[in-house]
Length: 253
Image (cartoon, rainbow, N blue to C red; front, top):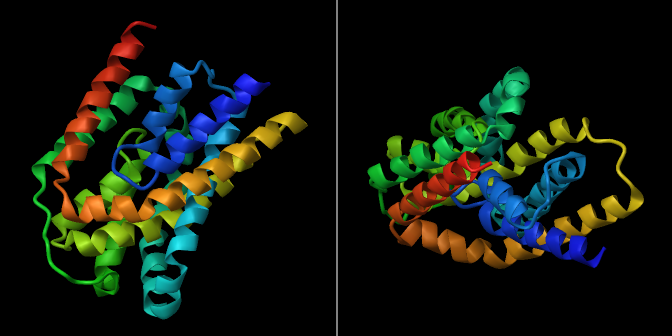
């Protein structure tokens, strides 16, 4: 039991560290699960859903003042979420099987990494409230690409926002905010398919969720600073390396 507790803590920490940066938390949970020998199954599926919610609660905690003092920002995030929500409901039966395809995950990582290396971020001092409703909607459309495992929701919004000529000082926090309804919506859809877990498994899931919340809350400020000040190519090269690791792991299975 102690070993499973430690493994749950590790996965919660991995989720908290990777949910908001463009490296694909899905791919990292796959790698971490394989490294610590947690096989895919109902427990891992439920844990993955729940710890994502923990990370999102950290975003709510961190950004609630920003939203409260910028009511229009709430509606812009809602507008951005509309295309994602519609596409998610329509494409769910097609997308769901892809999460077991390690080659798709690896290719998503590599292609997204190339995208992050190729784009040239725009650096100005504009604030997140500067996103227009049109831009918000288009960011939501571009976020649909993150349905492909390995692409990364944060990566899709960063690349999409940059292509729309939005400064990264704007797109980075907006991407964090858009994660809130996106992950809550995805979790609501996924959790309907989870049943039959034991009391001890639910306790472990609760532990992992708390860990994800704490780690995400502790690192949000740091990652916002990195994403808005440092070269995005760092994440691009890292993604390519992880993608190759996933491919090699799959080949040897």
